[in-house]
Image (cartoon, rainbow, N blue to C red; front, side, top):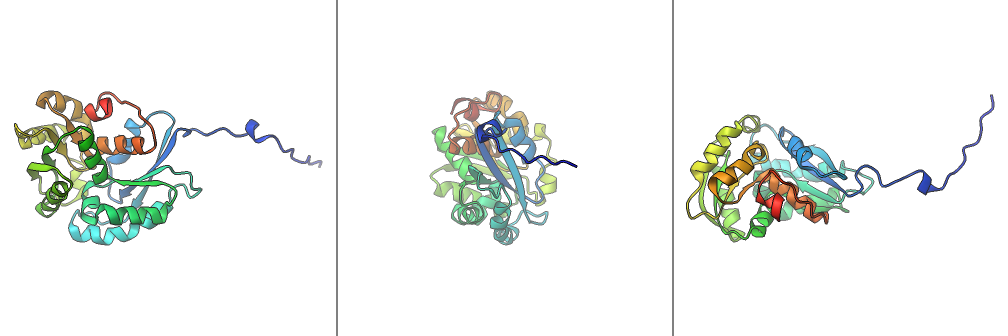
Amino acid sequence: MCIQQSKSAPLDHVFDDGRHHRAKIGFILLATEQTIEDDMMRLCPEGVGVHFTRAFIPDTITTDAFKAHADDLARAASTLLPDGSLDVISYACTSGSLVIGEDRVFKELRKGAPNAKPSSLITAVIRALRALDVSRIAVATPYLDEINVQEAAYLEAAGFNVLEIEGLNLEKDSDMIRVRPEFIAEFATSVDRPDAEAVFISCGALRSLEVLDALEQRLGKPVICSNQAMMWDVLRLAGLDDRIAGFGRLLRDC
């Protein structure tokens, strides 16, 4: 048997920048999450890679569950593209990021993915509302009251006037992912107030993306939902200014 020695070739004839040549974005999901992956793939522009991992949490969205869950964020972050090529990493949970707090979330993300720019879902929402130049908001959530109280306080501390916040009193993530989009639209409409400049539908588990554009037209004002805001945020952090039609003013105009 004759085995020929491999010939080294100039690298520019072997490699290109890969399928995800524009940016590589990582998301840390709750172990129970069933909506965000689909939404991110739906919104992702060509040439951008979206990469997912999960941090442990039981099927319960409570303050105590999030406190324990925070300890797993650094480990989860470390599993995303360990070659160091990740550009941005976002903790993809609205309630979790406000209960744990952005400072702690960012600290854990940097431990696991030190080369990536860190963000979180509540960070994305705050940036999105500021980009739309609104301050008076109405908030619809699926959460328990203990989470809603903390969310209102968090948004108020960030400079927003929360005119109304109402939740569906759901504890399980596995229930939140099953709320019908048509009901989400009706619920958000009921929470809206005439003096609210925007409506925020909180929670990445809700299928809000499916009704977002029609709801904005119905209410005549911007509507932010968690997953729309998150994709907008990570794209801008990656230095990309893509405009995406069909999912509200934020992705279309900002």
